[in-house]
Image (cartoon, rainbow, N blue to C red; front, side, top):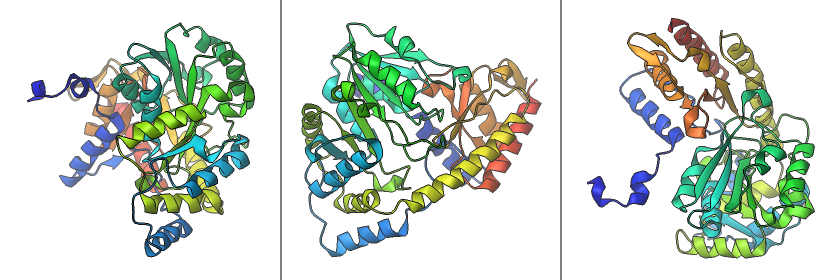
Length: 399
């Protein structure tokens, strides 16, 4: 019956991370001992004071429709946070709260991009960027980076790809899938380049803002005044506050873009869940100690997994500066086989590791990279050690 579906949905790729998570769940339900490290979700519970705020919201009657762009109290709290943590001044009406940062990104892309306009994606990039650009009938332009440069792009490299058709650039820092974090000087260089292209806009995805191991505050591109009116900052509560199931994200943007996203959202979902918004208001306004404690644990796991991965022959591994992923190069194993399975690319590798080692990792081609696979270390130390052991054993079988 696919011939009765729209071309839009037939041409859309399923999210590779969600697909691998689904396959892993199915295999576990069949009795297989699968360890799934495909999904980008903190394995910590939402802090108690945030859950208490949600319970209080229910008792106080926050059970009705909400304003499309979010409660004013939450938007004002977000504006205060952006000033406090990111050195950016926004009024509350420049902020739109959505049902997760993914919807925030979709609102912006659908509001800005016309058919045939170009969306530049420094690769590797989060899997949904290109799918959302395609949905808007834009043209995704991948700009490759390498593990040798920690998967970061320079302003000069990015500028080479800007054409009269370029409308939007989308990137994240800290980055999913690579963990790359752009420094102040690197962001400043990007800002200085973008000034020369005033009709090019940038979505700067900062959802992993707090999960940063550099010892320096995360740098927001919008904090450079000369390009603030070209930048849409996207953030949310899933990663830094372990609130994935609450589904609250937001943008901070020039007023005309915020108003367009309000209009777009009004026809798709209307306002985000009232109870989740009140929980988010508490999260963004109160003590960040639980977040900092979570990040300390992630850093310990990162260091442990780095030691284990670098001990595996022929893997090319760098040390991520943020987020909770390793994105490592497995291309040395391409062309090798075991037990009837030949590995020629990252997709083959992720399938081989699922079949042979019962570990769920995401193939790099979904992120725009043809050499790497992604491992999430948002899991217990015990599981991470076991995954690295299974990975080493499975790779050793390839010849």
